[in-house]
Image (cartoon, rainbow, N blue to C red; front, side, top):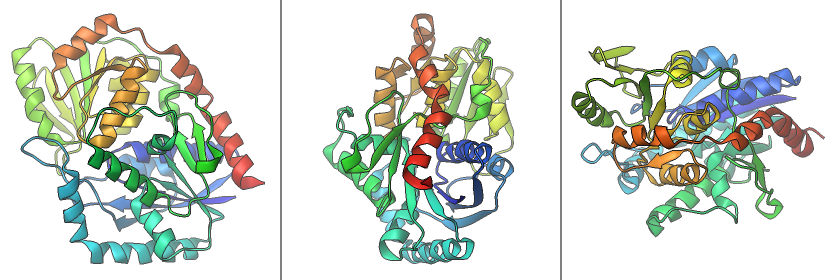
Length: 359
């Protein structure tokens, strides 16, 4: 069976999920014939994706969150207004997606939480069926527990979920822990799509803290904290457009641009991990037994952090106070149940896809 992926380019999680699923499908005799990937002038698209996906990649313009520099939080309403102004650009993207699907002629489209895919199937639907994949679909599960957040932001989050999955045959919800499927909501609960390199890692405990910053403005907090703690080694990755591969602040603090192998290397050897609470890297840290400091920048990441902290992943904060991470390291117990669940991923994914698509 031939699959075409449509992938949201915001952050790195959806990209690594696509790589992991592509490898699973290849090992089980299926073919990924192409990838349509969203892009934004606000983000640098990671080079590792082109190397690892091993399929033709076609780019199109897609809405993205707009960072709010003064408080480093994402302003959903400002982002919405910004993206509305770019409506003509996005209409061209809908036409592009429709044409590419008809040109490539896959058997199934798999959408990794890209809004433009959902809008294409709503407004200009191809005949090819599609399924949707994201952790965010778990928010539709009746057992999901939300953090105490703004009702308007929760509404916007649920609306975005709906928009990304118009006319989708099934919603595959990535989950930290097993939950029942919900057929009336088309919901299939599956383990996270961790990359093979993570599953094969042998973690060690080094003398440094590791981190990932979706919003590069947080770098000022990291630099200030390190100056107050000059004996602590820090290796942080950031999504800063046009930055060099390494930005060395001093011999104890280095910022790196996204590099999948280097990121995994530093994750495997760190004593703790700090992040803006993207789902994928938090799951990687849990799997490798690394305590996590989570600093959400928007409602979606607040949900991720709340869920992960309830699963024993670490602590949630409103800024990068790495003292909290150091305190957490001494008390961290890990989550062996998650490792077992994650190791079932390929078996459960192939079984679910066979059940819903391949028969």
